[in-house]
Image (cartoon, rainbow, N blue to C red; front, side):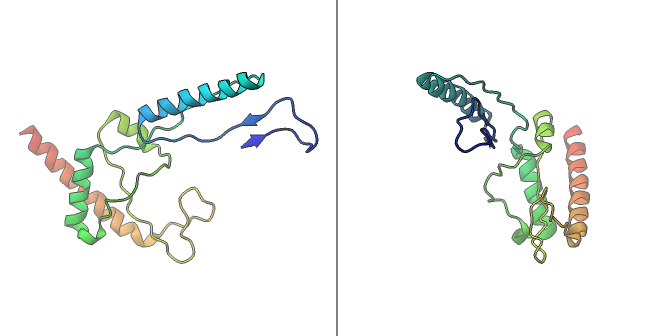
Length: 159
């Protein structure tokens, strides 16, 4: 977003620029923040201007732990068949509350697959999003199988 005055023929005293910066790896996020500060202040110094950079980190990347990702992939293969597993998806740059949980405990963010029923193939957080009720049994089956498998693993590790 760019806010810079209201008249086309008057140079404003100040400008406000805001946006989103996302990275998969924390080290890359650190580098982006440092370069944004350095570039902004370098340009301002060259032009005799000043700037204040407020860089707020809201959501970390959602990164699955390998053990849990492997467990979930095996479970999908066994429960629904190999054709239902899509594990070669590119990293998502969306922000997700689950990322905070993954910073505390191992886990795996799984997408059950909402499909694109009719013309409502909208992503979450879209005003036209329509949940696909046809996947309720798929989701329930997956979560029940996961709970059983995970409890078996915990018991096996305890023995």
